[in-house]
Structures are given as structure tokens and as C-alpha cells.
Amino acid sequence: MPSTRAIEVLATAADLFHAAAEEFVRAARTAIGAQGRFTVALSGGSTPKALYSLLATNYAGFAWNRIFLFFGDERHVPPTDPESNYRMVNESLLTKIAIPAENVFRVPAENPDAAAAASEYEAQLRGFFEIKSGEFPRFDLILLGLGPDGHTASLFPDSPALNEESRLVVANWVAKFNAHRITFTFPVLNRAAEVMFLASGADKADMVRQVLEGKNTPPLPSQRVQPSDGKLLWMLDEAAAAKLTR
Ligand code: 6PG
Image 1 (cartoon, protein in one colour):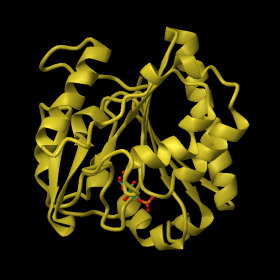
Image 2 (cartoon, helix red, strand yellow):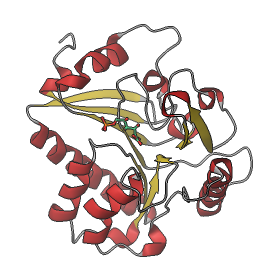
Image 3 (tube, rainbow, N blue to C red):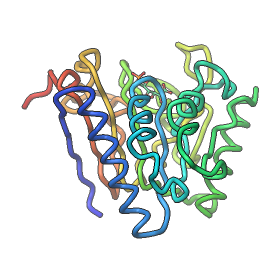
């Protein structure tokens, strides 16, 4: 599949999340039709919460038993912590749909040893995708957000994980948070069949323009997400796209 990049701009945030939910379900139907299952990595932060809530309300009856959910990154906190991406997804989606517990792969971020948590999650990915060392999983869809500094997942500018080429999941020390984050690496992101960035609101407009039109040296982490054999889809609302040259 040749790599493609598409940018979709929706009038409002509500329109954006509806279109993102439809794209999620379209990708799920295609994968389930082709291989009987859909593998997706969810993003954290605040933006996707509305998408997860919409999937729960508008697609509660979907074939969730054929969907396998992973997390592209996680904060180094227990699943009950207000900062936990798992907690956000659990409250906005998982508790409202009939998805088998064994289809949800949570990052074991309660482990005080972040590196051990990352290794354990990597082992879960290798087990699920039945891949050996040196091989990489191919997710059907990876959802990503855009941080104010151009980070995505927990791949922050000037952080050690940016240079990781063989691991699937690492504990990334983020100096500004004085904490580790557990995150997928670029090799995983760039082997996905589809990557969907979701950005909403005027406060994202500068960074959206920088990432999609800017020449940055080094490139911003979000600019390094270039699926080698897949689709890159940026879904934006008008406010987030306001500074793009169109
Ligand atoms: C996280 C995310 C992170 C997020 C961006 C955007 O764990 O925080 O995975 O990469 O997508 O920081 O966050 P907002 O959606 O809250 O702006």
C-alpha cells in the first residue's frame, strides 16, 4: 500500500469527532472483513475523549468482540489515577461497550519500575502479534494527538525515546514532567496501516501549521510519523486548521 497523507478539515469540533468515529468504524469494518479482527492503539490526553464517548453511544452494538485495543502511550501512574489514559478510556468507552476484557491491553503503568512496565507491555505486543525480536507489529489503526511542543504519543522533543530503533515500547524520561512516560516508538507508529492524528481548537493552530507545513531541524516528533506503507490522516476542526495555507 503506497503511503498517503490526507488532511480532513471539519467545520466544528462536534463534526470532527463524528467524522473520526466514522473513520474508526470504517477502518474496523475493513480490517474485520479482511482478517477477522481489528487492532487499534488509542491515544490519551483530552482531545480523543469525545471520540471515545461517541463510539460508546453511537456504536455500542458494534462487533467489539473483534476489536483489540492497545494504548500508544501511558503516564507512569496506576490505572485509577486521574492522569491515567487507561482511566480516561475506561470511563468514556470501555465501561459502556461489550468488549471482552481479554481484548483490552492496558499498559501495566502501576509498576514503580517504568522500564519494567515498558518491557512487559512490549512482551504483550510481541505475544499478541506473534512476532520475534527484530520484527514489528502492524496495527490496523493508531490514534495520535498533537502536543503544544510538537510531541505525539509520549515522544517529546529532545527525549531519549526519539532515537529508539529496535524496541516497540520504552520508558521515556520527560524532563519537564520530571517523570517517565511509557510510549510506543517510531518504528511501531510508522509500520501502521493507518495513523490518524486528531487535533481540535485554536490553541493547536500554530503547531498544526508547523507540523504540516514547517521545515524544522530536527523535525518535530509529530513530523517523524510517516507510515512507510500506510495512510497518514490528519483530522482537524476549522479552529485547529485556521493557520494552514489553503
Ligand atoms: C498523552 C497523549 C499525548 C497527547 C497530546 C495532546 O498521554 O498525553 O498521548 O500525546 O495526545 O499531549 O494532548 P491533548 O489532547 O490533551 O491536547
